[in-house]
Amino acid sequence: MYSRDDIHCEYPSYLTSTVVQWVSPMSLDTAEHMEEDEDTSKSIPKWVELEYMHMRSLAGPGAHVHFTHLSQSSCPSLSSLFDRGTPTESSESAQASSHQVSVMELMKANDIPLIKVCLLDPKAEKELSPEDGDGRFSWFLFGGILGDDPPRDRTSELRALGFPTRHLGPVQMTTDTALGVTKIVVQDKVSLSKIPFIDYPNIVFNAKESVEMPFRYIANGNEPILPAGMREHLYDDLNQSFQF
Image (cartoon, rainbow, N blue to C red; front, top):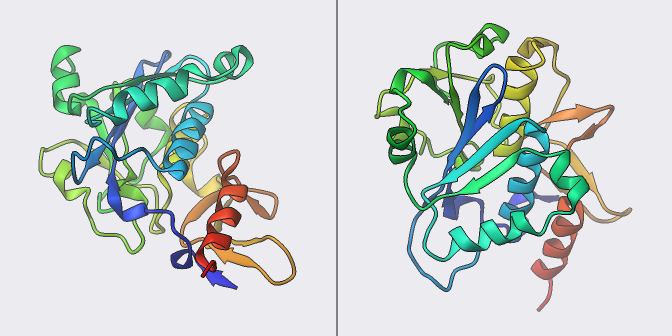
């Protein structure tokens, strides 16, 4: 068995924030994409594409997901990815928008005060609750900041801005999982303790090959809910790791 560190997905190289808005009550999910360099030749990694598409699916119809602080090259790349969805996929998923501006600039453009934006922060004192979906927040703010292994607390860059915060429990989640959990809590009114989770799942490909994922996922029976295509991507990456 291999650990998540044995494959090439570059989790640490991207710091993202996502804002999501649900129509009723109005809320918006935002992902602040804090890239560490502005290399215009650098494309968005496949795992990022898969997670971002999964975020649209988990947010569901009637929601709007905004990806902010994208580079000059990644912004149109991500917009093109969203445009390639089939009509059926589009009708079952949230709207999505890509922005080069920061979440703070997007808030200003939409006249959203800081107190109406909830930052999902592993170090928050309060746990997210169904009551947080009663309209007290307009936007919910997430990031790939939730998906580092080991966690590097890059949420501190957003925490320092003074957002109200909530946590989703003590175990690190991927960003798409964090969004899905938030939707279940604030829209479906299910408390965090009632959601089935699976921690550090072992993704088995065959009798000899598997990968342990160092995150918490929403469980579907005994299996983690992963983005469509992620299992295949992990296997391809694993094989590339052992090509000499």
